[in-house]
Length: 367
Image (cartoon, rainbow, N blue to C red):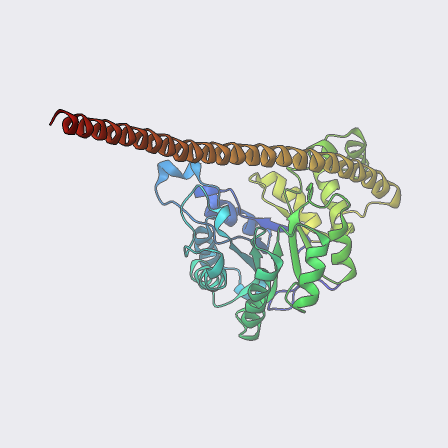
């Protein structure tokens, strides 16, 4: 698969610098990453708060701060690869509402406006890549959004397009075939219970789609702490984290790294620039076995998550049925009470009429 490139024709690095979760430190940390040598940047149009005391509560990438850092750097825009996303409404909850507010029927308009806002936030006339991060939107609803991405490309406003958090390989294949050319990038967590057989990376390799992963290191603690990976790192004169990133790159993955430490960023830069020592097959097989074990764990987690979800749904349905039965009982009780009261009234009327009739007869007999 040919790698994506910048406007100047340079291939993007093997590692993309992720700006998420940096809060008010976003601009400073991005400046440091650029100074160290990173030229590929991932961000998103998350909602933001502007009050300092609330920032610790917000999970976002502060896209406007990314734009500030990019506008202040001396690096040519044509040499940078800047990737942003349209982030759907549920990802903003419970923080500030998204821009713009929308419901399912207005997702296409919201995506368009979000794209324009990203251009404004990042102080640029174009994006190198624009992705849709809306896993809760159904495939049928996603098709108009992907067609909108093609329009952005035709208008030269973005060069590459794709999707994030795609749940299954079947969904990916359906969208890829329905809107050809719209999915050039897929960005997913490296480890996920969604698709336990890990068919999505293979599909991307087979169809020339760049596969980005987030939580690449933070979600791989079990693998990185394994003695086998530590030994591989020592044999290659590097850390387990760098050895694992090298493994990801050699298997066709473009990982996102959001390290806050300059030391960690520098150690990963050799992998980003393709200067890292290639891992031999034996070491690759050892790490692949660790990944296979993680896949089994993810499958177990996925089954447990599904089981828990089913229990929650069953409980919810039970609660709804109980409330429905209570409402029916109350309604039936109310109707029965009205009927009983009506019967009492009718009997009272009958007794009153009988008493009145008796009084009339008595009165007639006396006269």
